[in-house]
Image (cartoon, rainbow, N blue to C red):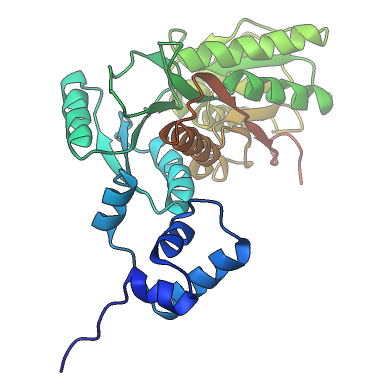
Length: 335
């Protein structure tokens, strides 16, 4: 039995009563067509179950409708939500994402870059597992690059990063709002960009409100073990602390465990704010953690939108900060 013939763009044009060129423009979102013409063409395509030929579409548009993403985040803690957000935006334009893991290896990264360029991707998103800056991937003639989560050291590049400073200020404002004044910070390694930025922003916001940290920020590892140790140090020093801002949810969960074991109630005695809103940690903590969410999916969507603008000839160079948000749970405001 012969296979049914696949509908072509000519069939769509004939059913819609327009020229082939008009049908192509309507389906590809090009040109200045009347809304009723576009609707008629798309209805005809749907009725005929028309599927554009990818090769012909690429040849006609001079594009491959693919985007490369290079990451160093092998665990995927940050890159996966960012990828989901980017695909939300790129998928709406029927674009596909090719994900490459560089594993913090410059040679591997350059290999992936060459492969992506060989596949004629329309653009590239570069991301990683930590905020801060990194060297640019190098000249990529005719292929726009957007750096996401971490920034390029070259100011002329386009980078979109989480507003960690703004997030830390939200944490400080929230604690002040719920009546806390004796606040300390427990965070990650002092050499780490995020640890420094978040701690400094909390201290600055408190100073603006006429308050100050009860002790200089405590720096250690990004771990629950360090959170437990830091809480023990604060208790051993006899510091009168009624709130803590932690540089990560892992640290905050460790602090919560140590406070509970010492007979301190969270939040009645000590309010606790984490950072990252990693639900695996924040929701499993006792009590569930109030946390700062960097909105990584939203950041991914923003990066993809900036890349699409660059692909369309409207680049947006410079540093773009994506706002964080406060997620309130029982560790600061009991149910």
